[in-house]
Picture 1 (cartoon, one colour):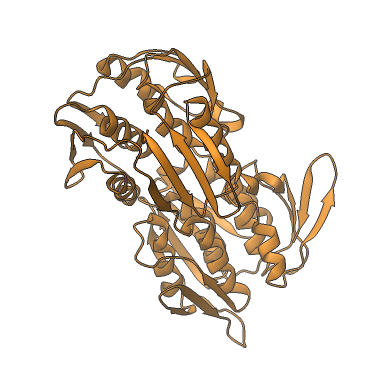
Picture 2 (tube, rainbow, N blue to C red):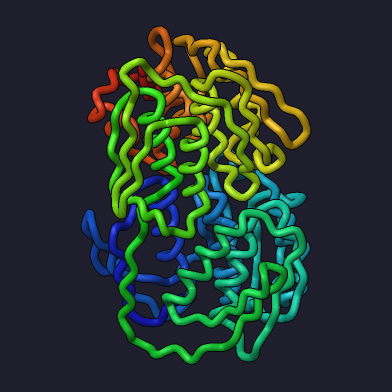
Length: 405
């Protein structure tokens, strides 16, 4: 959306990152150059060069880019792959007609056929399913608003992610007033064309959470590159690790976990993950090594992920000898009973694969993860990083890639 050049420092290389790069090119951006550390993007605004875009399996991607694509009057079909085709998108069916966007879907599922241009107006939306819908609308309104407009949100979840959205928008010159997360007023901005914007992507707390838990339950580890002052919701993993009794030292740009000589004897903990549901998998791996019943709140946020994560965690950790009970919005993890090596399945969910791999570091025998390549969605270097930490990771190449931990 920025008319001019943007230089992104520390870009990712996950499948979600690659899908996003493909989408912005379909919407008219030009990738001028790309190295391991930088990405140069040139744009004249949203001017689609294709009548279709594919967001891969990225839930954030489709919820954010769909309103952005609607800034153009160009008809466009929006699609995805894998689990994304089964995830509910009827939010757009309800909201888009109010913004002068025509839309067709398959009973609220992909593919979506839309035609703008989006006309910003005062609207009220439901924020209970995902904050990602709001992220997309805020960004699109920030570009298209010609006078102040307000988005009112009922029952907003994952507020820290909206803080992150507003932080990025401010960096690019957008003006948004946050009215205590109950409404957001977007004011028009006259953008200075051809201005080069430099943006550095923070280290990812969502991926880092698995390494930190691995350090707590299995061995000494120092993780650098995570900003402890970040607005990322998953930074909350630090509190859970502290509550579990791990020996942790937090410094400006690195976090050190010291594994006790007698092994980790964690304390059960209570954690509210309503605003950071992506932490459920590493939290379960942590809770499985604590002596007693840990309680994690926010299970209702898990139904529409890459898998139904509440049930998937219950199934796969059950194979490893850990009993998990689901009671309404609460997950109870009975830890301290000993982790068993087992054949588990990722359900093609990147966070389930990583959670099982971390738990396997403390199991009594080898664990085999089927569809282990699911980690490529967000953290393609995950197994390599475990290997560098002296974990015994064996690769077996077949039609699918399995990882033996």
